[in-house]
Image (tube, rainbow over the protein chains, first blue to last red):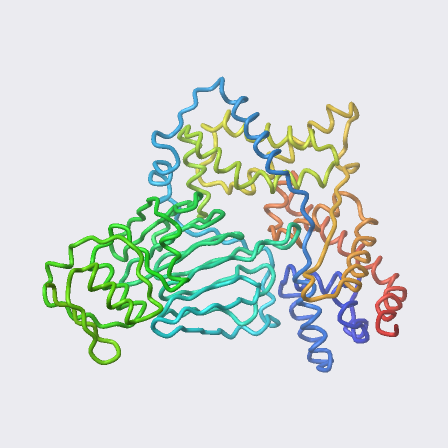
Length: 344
Length: 193
């Protein structure tokens, strides 16, 4: 069938979105259809807006999925396991962690599932939004998809102004932030949520977790759901239980996993610091990184002392008194941000 | 090379955790693809199971560099069609295969009523194609597969996939063009009301 550009001139955006040749251009662009639609736009510049909106609609078209229920998935796997039992099954010693350690390094590239072809010309506004919090400020914001983010003090976050269907929702974090990711609609388009922090990526599909990167160390703590944490060198680790934490140190090149009390890791949102065998050195680093205090310590032997308990950060005077008691030291304030600690 | 490649290597080394992870990653894709051929849930479940069991059984013959998505779809499609044939007792020809799916749009971009009209329109047009034409449209438009990959999955020559795709698209265009008048009405009504 021969197309003429005139045929499409009087269609509105909905009609355009339903035209097979228009769909072909949006979903599977090639030289021929690109040339055709560029010629169309050159001939009918007044249609530019309609074409852009029709392209967005056509690009968002997806096939409804008939997914197996979780119970079905488990039952199928059980039957597969039963079906291969006759064979010799060698499970990896040490289970999943061993497995990941043994094979994950082989993953040469990160899986990119680009289902929607690039209709680059008509992509929506790609400008980035940057939001930052001041020292000591806990700030809540809502991302374009409804995801809730809470920023700890001295933290910045960057994301694209508009998030298009079919592309991962991406966020860059410097500092510490808690994410409550908006779950996907049951039949909605797959839209992965990704947090990039330092050299670590966190990939999720609806869950809540905490990311902290300070001084070259990134720590991800899972609150609910599941996330896959991938380091810059493509090592990956699955966090599946609340309190699972993975740490990555820039340069050291390994992902360390352990279990931590979730509540303690999230207490900053209530302006509290929960310490559990935390070294004074780590505490001071937090006071400096998150709250902007400058700590002057007169005796460095104190740095290795470990302390436990809860510090209320909302009131500076209470904090100073609590530090004095916990550290058994004279704690005084100089100016607005310097704290002097002199052991008794 | 994709990151699933390491699962592949694990399976080839007889590591059952690799099979489990591959299953977790792909069972939904295969299941929902299977449901497009038939409404028989048990049959689709059986085909999913057999696909993974046979991957394990023939793990030593798996090619090192092959693309898991493509391999799984191809092997699953074969298994499913064989099951369909034995269970119905008839000989299926590729031509008589059914393949159907429903489309939807991002509700943020297009309002409920207009989305419903548009989906129905696309749906009605798709309904007039053959099963194979719908399947190739599905792979091209929604899965973004190349003709080479589609040829492998649908067991045809690459050149034949070009032809099938072109015929399907030409048919769609014809169907849509003949219905443009009524579509115009349907779309305009909400604005007049």
